[in-house]
Length: 145
Image 1 (spheres, rainbow, N blue to C red):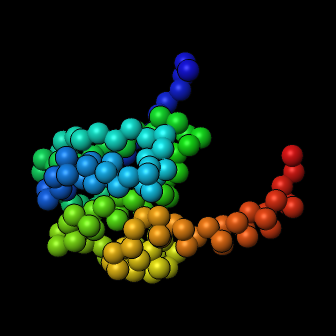
Image 2 (cartoon, rainbow, N blue to C red; image 1 turned 90 degrees about the vertical axis):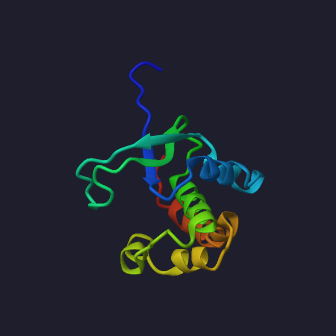
Image 3 (tube, one colour; image 1 turned 120 degrees about the vertical axis):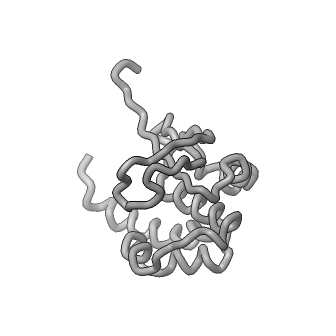
């Protein structure tokens, strides 16, 4: 509708083949389809200038662009897991994850270790389903409608 803005995120690196990454994400089949729900994914090129992480300043990067089209069906956590699994699968020699920082952002080492061990995205987020259901049950009694 009018006045609606859509969030987007771009990721890239010199070693990423955006077409291969896009195929990997799309060809994972129905098991990963829910990770892409509500999101348009396209290939892109860009040149970062003074990036906050200091990487690839002024270097032309190839990558993918994620544009949120439907916030109700978009699940950023599932998309991030599917993206990391795909990147690890395609570029395990080039992808560098700093364990301390990654584990801090992911609330522990479990996600990093699952990615490193080659688990699929649905295997990873499937392990959260029981804990999430228990939390939602506990939370429900405190919600006011």
